[in-house]
Amino acid sequence: MIRVGEAPIKQEFLTEKPSIPEAPASDPRDAQNNQPKKRKKGGQNKRRRAYQQPASQMLCQNLIRDAECLLKDKCKRSHDRQAFLSMKGPDLADECVNFKLYGLCNYGIACRYGSGHLDKDLRNIIDGDLNEKMKIYEVKKTLQKEIQSNLRSKQVWFKRSYEFLESNGNDLSTELGTHLKRTLSKRPKIDVSTVDSENNNKDNVIQTNGSAVDTESKNGFKAEANSQNKDEPNHKLTCQNVYERIKEDYYCLQTRPKKTLDLRGKLFLSPLTTVGNLPFRRICKEYGADITCGEMALCGDLVQAHGSEWALLKRHHTEDIFGVQICGNNPTMTSKACELINSECDVDFIDLNVGCPIDMVFNRGAGSALMDRATKLEQILTGMVHVSDIPISVKMRIGTSESKLTGISLCERLKKTGISHITIHGRTRQQRYTKKADWEYINKCKEAADPITLVGNGDILSYEDYNESQKFTDSVMIGRGALIKPWLFSEIKQQKHMDISSCERMEMLKKFTRYGLEHWGTDTSGVEKTRRFMLEWMSFLYRYIPVGVLEVLPQKINERPPYYHGRDETETLMCSDNCQDWVKLTEILLGKVPDDYNFLPKHAANSYSK
Image (cartoon, rainbow, N blue to C red; front, top):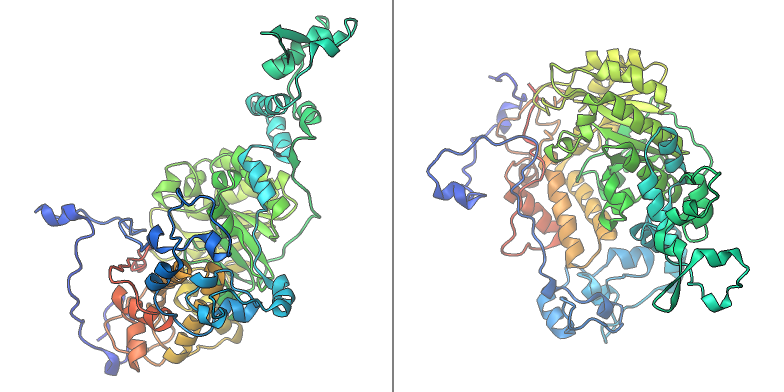
């Protein structure tokens, strides 16, 4: 007998619940106190402990490049090649994916597959012809070192952002004054002996302890106002006159030809934090996804040139339509980040995250908190459209709570900002994934947003779900459905259910392993990053129920499967909800885990809609 909310599994595959040893308490205080544990909040497992390789077990990057380390006393990494080799352990395989693909492995002796590209003296071998041929396919850095340096020293001129903010009455005097002072302080000092007594410049020079100092350098932009005629109005700091003074010392962001984007009828992979990484997007592209989007990046970190945040904006050459998603809470930062991306990144659209339910983001007034600040959201999107030559979009929810369904009113207001399209997730922030997506409300949002393209999102796990959603929206975005079964895009295009065997799923994981090592590296750190992100993906992937096991098709995303065994041992491991079984699968592909290895997924993916 099938219970309500339970997936219909064929009788011969049902089994008893396996006995799993009780895991140690994640917080020592829980074990010591006799008080009952507090109810766990949904959304994230915040007390997880990710494995991190000690710095003493990592070889210095200079030694990997056959160079000398200039910071031997301060460098925390190992400088003993033989000691490092003994700690590194044996190679995981004979063939390095990077050397095979590009003719060069940048990890040299540190590579866990190094036997394929190291000579007898442990020197790196380079296949020059192959390396030159494949350079055009390398995933390049999104931010050049020169621009990164200029951003950190605050010597980038955000022309369009400043113009927009100034036209909207924002007070930029402090920021513009800082730019002007920085330039004036670098000017060479004027020697009094070389100044003609009849020259008016002499009035602008003062004597201090026997040395001449330019008053403009000393007092910044105020000196210019003081030196003017009393009859003339005081000098006003504007974007234009400040730029005329500093343009030789500052880096100016470039413009590009205007782009347009048509999403109607295309399959859209949702921007997914942590699990929507570049290797996973490559898998989805191979299964038929038309549009991909990078993980959410914070505007403040982008403007401050944080390398980890810019890494989220990397694009693979197979992603023919690719966008990035940013998150911010004020027009100043979002405009600057948008102008930077417009100038420096090869992307097809920029999406603003107005749906993130995470407390850390919400409490700062960003993500879904912007749905309750409609005027601020309107200003942010207007500024982004003003500074960008590529389409701007917004992804939001139907509201922050069931008593605050603001999706329809927001669609009516935001279509006037000039954005390209709006994506609606059919739940509120408060609901997370505990309720079914409201496609009827999404349809009302579509009518309010007309003529702008509206993309619907929520609970798509089969081609039947997709066909039904087409009645309510112009295009469809797929998130958890793609994590649970990435071949969903192929199912939709072929309009059939695909019974993917455990062998085919293992081949898919092998591909992810190869793409991960290519992206994160083949040293121990890269191997463990690939393992970690594969395990994060498996926290969703295990929820797939094979077609041959189901009693009734299709599988519904809100139905929790009973305990069952697969058609073979590997399939049984893949359908297990025990993290240790997922770790066993990664050991087949990436070698044995360290003895103290422990994994808990970042996302609490066990929530099922009601």
